[in-house]
Image (cartoon, rainbow, N blue to C red; front, side):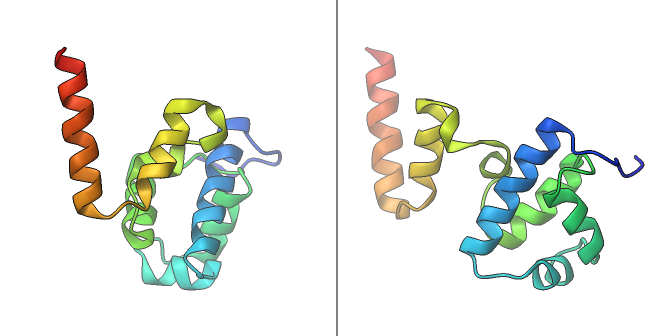
Length: 110
């Protein structure tokens, strides 16, 4: 898909989320691009600016390098309680996360 001249709203929201997670990880655009399969700082810059709509494959590559799920890239914690819950669980220790899943699963069966 060709590069846009103005940002697409959805692409920009995803791009901002990628940028936030990249900065949280302490990575520059160049480091993220070249340590992932993107291999292009320019493409990553365009993604973060909302000038290109990322493919699912691109989201997977970025998420893998950042150590997050694709869901973390496309979910804005400001979008409501469910999105906030996804954000809050991102940093949980595996044991705590398993316990939370068990508790939520048990409450759903009631």
